[in-house]
Amino acid sequence: MNADQREAVRSNAKYLHNVRPLDPEEISEYVEGQPHPAAVRQVLRESAVELGLVERGDGLFVPVEEGPVAVTFDGVETFPERYGRVLEDLLVERYGAGWPEGDSGRRIRERIRAVKAAYLRGEAVEYDAETALAYAVYHLPGYYAATQYVLAELVADRLLPRRLRVLDVGAGVGGPALGLCDLLPEEALLDYHAVEPGAGADMLEAMLAETGRNVHATIHRTTAEGFDPSTVRDGDDAEEDGPFDLILFANVLSELADPESALGEYADALATDGALVALAPADRNTAVGLRATERAVADRGPYDVYAPTVRLWPGETPEDDCWSFDVRPDLEIPGFQRRLDAAVDDGGSPSGSPDGPSERDGEFVNVDVQFAYSLLRRDGRRRYDFQLDPSRAA
Image (cartoon, rainbow, N blue to C red; front, side, top):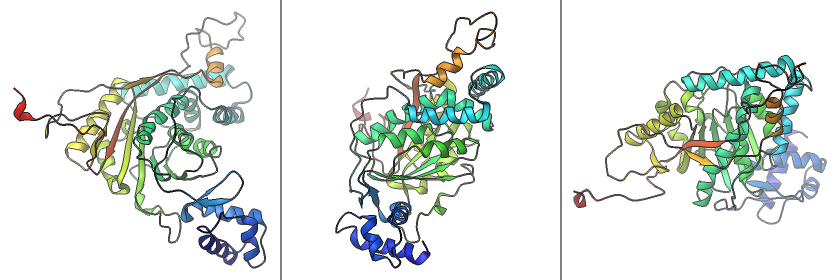
């Protein structure tokens, strides 16, 4: 399909979208040369964000409805198998079908241990392809679930629009992205932008291919510090270009040299009524660091704390360390974690060793859903809008 035909498809879609559902077969008849309906469908998909269209299950396109996302959230019990299959396909592609065994299994386990130790010491982690795979095996399910629990609070408060523009800074291997995509209803239109410089971007791309038909994703392979959100455009004159409704900093602030400055740099990219979600592991260093960063950007601007913390006294800030985090029900153990854990004995040897398998301690099973988080806004709105009156306190 040439450029003139593509523009004719978009022009017809703009004319008809408020009249009736868009049928690629019908639009094909209005375009010179009558391109195949499949080609028309592809143009409509590529232009969906620009035109504000969602694709229905019957293959027709309709305008996305205005208003907030409305879903019933009952928690997270399992990590979806379709994403687990993508991860295992990548593991098999790199190591072979017996990836949990032998040298490959040993290397993956060593990488998991190294990443965990670096986090506890507050050190940065360099993500090559092997580290990204190990990280995904251990952390992907928990981060998927944690993100859904946090975003469900915004959904419950009717603060996520159906036409949603998202910037995911430090997207990693995709846990937060997948959690977001699965939380949204099918009729929502998601314009998703990821910022990820590391090897995890390749895995993220593979994972996003398994998300819904109304998820439109772009990966920017650069650092949080090097990315300019004002350069993001999705069409020549798209109305949706501009501020993001949601900005995610999930499990990345502790890896930035100056997290306070990083959040400040992204403030102008956030819509006035949007939310910035900062998420961190529940260990003491990252959780305390998150709360310290939250206080800094709230006290000196440009953000206000929406949740979960509350400022009771006007103009006063807590001075002590705050190690606070949420704990939710454990997930079911994913098959890939179970296989990796079962393949190692107490000495780190494969379970097929002559001495037979030893008792497993679950070192490589990670189904805990524990996280620290902060929801920040720019409009002064707070979930719990409550202040004590100093004149009435002794």
